[in-house]
Length: 122
Image 1: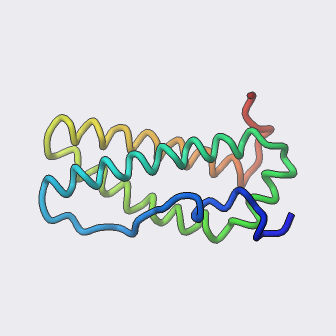
Image 2: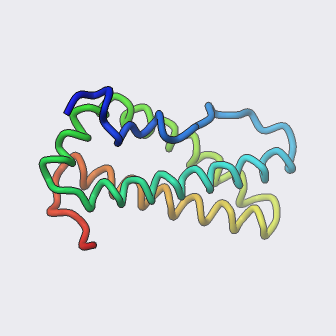
């Protein structure tokens, strides 16, 4: 399957923003909300990929290795954002917890893609 026709182009499908410097609590809360939604979409997307046949998952990994590595670097920035959010208020703490749980799930799914599992049951 040629790369240009690959419907699994992770970073093309997801409009991820670059890390943002936090100026105040409102910005932090807004960024937590955005990152939480983005991370939820990444989790859903990776779960769909994991439902595919192993051969299709292998193609996805080989065609998207650099993108996934870049995504892992974004995860590091997001993990720092979750720590900042825990210090603001209850709403920010809840967003931080959700983002942290989705980060953990995404990393587990990426590890499964790279190191192999039989896939998720549909």
